[in-house]
Amino acid sequence: MNSMNPSPEVEAVETPLLSVVIPCYNEEEVIGETMKRLKAFCSGLVNLDVELIFVDDGSSDRTRELLKSFAAEDSRIRLIGFARNFGHQIAVTAGVDAACGDAVVLIDADLQDPPEVVHEMIAKWREGYDVVYGTRIERPGESAFKLATARGFYRLLNLLSDVSIPLDTGDFRLMSRQVADALRAMPERDRFVRGMVSWVGFKQTALPYKRAERFAGESKWPLRKMLRFAIDGILSFSTKPLQMSVDLGMLCASLALAGILYAMGLRLFTNIWVEGWTALMIAVLFIGGVQLICVGILGEYIGRIYSEVKHRPLYIVQEYLGFNQAGPAMSRSPVVVKK
Ligand code: UDP
Ligand code: MG
Image 1 (cartoon, rainbow, N blue to C red):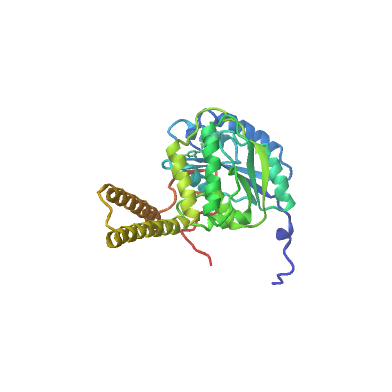
Image 2 (spheres, helix red, strand yellow):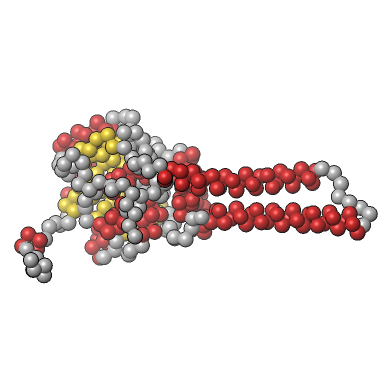
């Protein structure tokens, strides 16, 4: 057929679709309010259809039940119920995998990212940007400790990695279809979504917004999880720690060499010599410590390789609800590496 002459069906312009991905973990106190705010947001959309994809990350409270009742009332609501808790980054990934929209928005369930800001993101997207990420100009209700560590972490990450990841940016963002597809083609297990989105490129822009306080409930990120997340961020985006461990080893070896030469020099050319075992002990402990650190860094990378080669699925879905067929239209194709 003549491909230059598209059939009328193709020519008919469909309303673009916006997919909003909302990861939820034990959010029973907030989810009702979130639903209200999201619905209000949806009714303000002009010339844009919407699907709300809630990902229940294995909540142990009534979150799933509440989400199911919302989904029963509204055909725009979809639910992906995980078989257990897989973590925020994986929940977001599942949402992006299932999203069919021309643009995909990631937003937290606790209303810290105000849904109203998404209107501004959409405006930027219509201007032609592929990624619009929210940067926080204010973060009320967060401890000074969290703010300071977050800042330090992003500085360190940018120092260590080759992709520049914007400061004060979380996962609250809008992505075009192309970027969402690029993200879906990245099969890695240790996911640091904001870094991965920076990495893909395209036209990206920041949108400053005031981060609100959590509406109710508690943060689901204890210090241990934050630390793990930070390590994931650094190790997934940089092999500099490996180079640094080599540098550190060289430094120690040259210090030791200098010490040996010094001691030998004293012994050969003077009547005094280095005495005692204290210096020896310190040297042994120091080198031993450095070796352990280096082996530990190596171990982190090897652990990652191990978990990658196992090729397990990133997440296990217990139930899909509100999608057209049995599941989402497009499911993650297992590890297809596009060249
Ligand atoms: N979340 C999740 N799985 C987890 C932890 C958190 O899906 O294991 C969700 C949580 O329900 C919320 C979002 O991720 O919608 C951000 O979590 P939280 O508000 O606890 O993080 P913070 O804002 O304190 O960084
Ligand atoms: Mg929060």
